[in-house]
Image 1 (cartoon, rainbow, N blue to C red):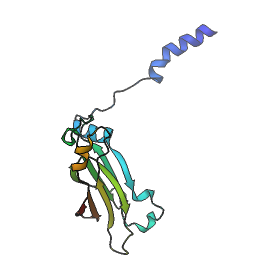
Image 2 (image 1 turned 30 degrees about the vertical axis):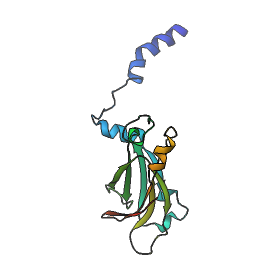
Image 3 (image 1 turned 90 degrees about the vertical axis):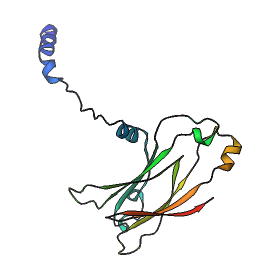
Image 4 (image 1 turned 120 degrees about the vertical axis):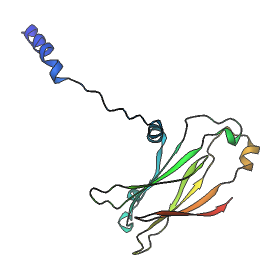
Length: 162
């Protein structure tokens, strides 16, 4: 009986366990973005998410997976991406990218402005690398940006340099 079961499995296993190749996109940039980026924040994560008129997600990630030397210039640049969606069926979300920096951190969501149709938040450039020399770290200045997104566009304002 056990031989009959074994023969049965051998004969029919190829059709039951057949595999097919998965499509392999030829975009190295897209692969890097998806592999290295982290979601910094999302309106969906907020307690008062119903107050936001748009679904907004903020991502950041390095352009290359490299280590820093002792100088700031040796550190890889990071990209900041923002997706904006109304949540409507069949919609294609908008994608925005802020200028490159050595790193990004999410600061805060601003309270929603009633009936404005916009979402406002603050992000800050950062140097999170631990192996930089103190002198190099002291020369570097963080920048804060207030970003406003709507269904049709996005703007930013440089708040300050520290």
